[in-house]
Length: 547
Image (cartoon, rainbow, N blue to C red; front, side):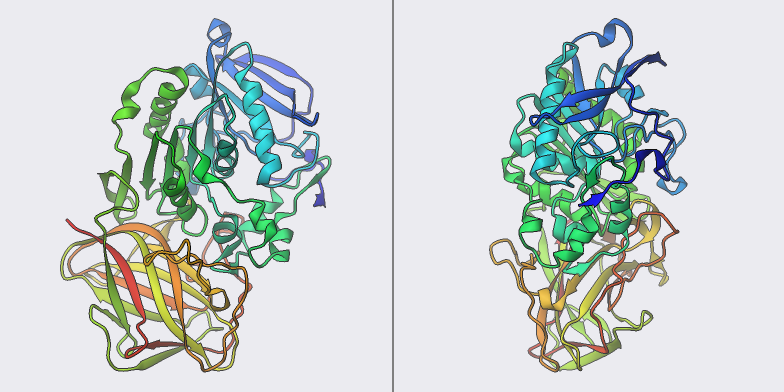
């Protein structure tokens, strides 16, 4: 834990309006600010409530909560220009990554924005995730569902942090929770947030952690705790989600584009949730653009209208799974499916031939090796495969890679899947919520973390334990099973798939102060040696979808 910083000195946020209870009626809204809501232990958190003005807001309102630590006063109708949220899509009342009160109140809803325990001027100390925060969210759901103006049905919505809390509280089954709409949120704190393949993330987390410091008490120093717990231990287990207990109706939206933060975890949650009523939509766009896109907001309304109001049955006609299959950034087709991953997937091996840096369909018989300087950010290995027919690759990829070193006892491997068109130009994809120049998919692994969880791993998706380290013996080859995060891409005849392997981040260009994922604390030294051929069956496993 760390001492909080004065909320009235917060940088990069609107000026804090204070803690006095305020009641406003403007722009068709009935707004109440700074209502103290007691938690089960007596701690009070401050909540803002938005309702339709007049008789429409007096009774029978379904409630949507946007649970966020970023400040209920942190409202704007503008995001970073790179987010592509068009003017007019959201009102000035919209909190960061939350549903817009002006829009939802017009459609007969109440919106609640809390400042969670220990954030801003709410009482208590802030614990980032885990049971304590989940119980507080439970208590707010029950408080909201029993207000005289509520119809007794509460939903949860929002992006990122506002999704992570949904994975945490829904398993507790608050009686008044009627539906959730998780929109791109990691569900594994270690593998998707703190350590990618066991390699510590060093840019996004310090930045995000700095947004959780505004408090009159203390808040958890998540980055310091992450650094103090490099292996999967009780700290990380305290933040696990019991996704198998989520039975509430669930509309999940994921993306292929959020490689390095939310893409994997949102899809993993869908696989594990047993809810009778659940839908999955996966896009390849920027997250805030897609969340606030008017067509997306309309689908959110259809979902909540059915489960919180009892009308509009259109959600029952939706395909259970809808996938955007990408050709390149902003060029794609939409496929309706019955399940995820796709049951008809044919997994094929493309073998590494390091002699000519190619990927081939048949095993390579002659042993060979390729070396690159792991400490030189310009050095890498790459292997190309050219498609002889149009091919869709949708799902999980895996890289099986035989490696050794010439003196180091560990190595950090960074992997990217890229697409090249018939002219030999790299094809860009939307990447990490704000960028247009990204890869098809990414993967990572620290070699000493290669031990697999046998109960969770599948032939196409390795899951690593991360509970202990197995250092390398120089000169002794070992096989690594590297998970590559899910993707969906069509390759036309004559186009190429490129596999890139190196000892540092493959994508590093991001404007200052914008969200981005980097790993600057690696263990790499000297030469990385990749082996193929003979007994070294290095290969890329790809998910081919039959036409």
